[in-house]
Every structure is written in C-alpha cells, then in structure tokens.
Image (cartoon, rainbow, N blue to C red; front, side):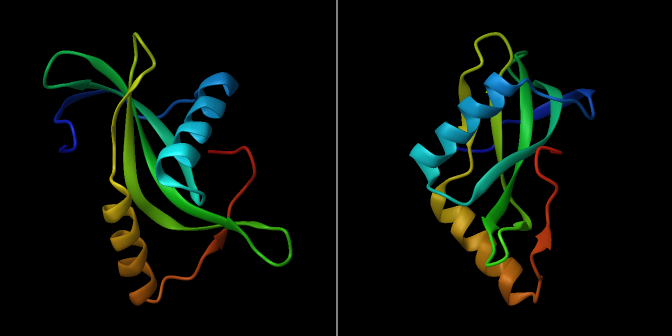
Length: 117
C-alpha cells in the first residue's frame, strides 16, 4: 500500500487527545513493534476527499539513563478523522530501512520531551 495522496493541509499543527494517543501507541506496538512514537499531528484532506490526521513516526527508545531519545522521523501514519481508524502506516521494512539510513548518516539520537509531541 502506498502513502495516501494529500491534496490539502487543513491544519498544519495540532494535538490529539490522550485516548487516540494511547490507541496509536498500542497499534504501533502490535503492528510495527517497539520503538516508534507517533508525533507532529496535522489535519489533511486526502485525494479521495476524506479528512485524516497525519502523524510522523519517530524512532524512539529509553537510554541507559532512563531518558526518552529519538533518532528522527522514519515513517508516517494516517488516521481517518471520522472513524479514527488507521488507513495507512509505513511498513516495518521501510521503517527499518529508514532507521539504517539515519544511523549510516551519523545522526545521533536526541532527548525527546515526554508528552510533548
């Protein structure tokens, strides 16, 4: 499945509620494994006329000092606004390849603020 085509950005930045954040965290763990955090929500209109919440996927982990760290954006997830169902998520293969690209580029993980995506 391909990344949906965005025809219009309706709201560039926003926030999601705790229930959706929790549901997305569970979806990612169950379907993509540990190490991914949905962040930077925006409201978009897709080619098919549907409205969706588009979020980037950050590769995250807890370091030896118990700090949340992120390597960078490695994928995307789209949630249909009306049903709150995931309509697209970057494949695990692409997520893993994008992690390798960032690491090979010498990108160092940065401390991420907890709860501030």
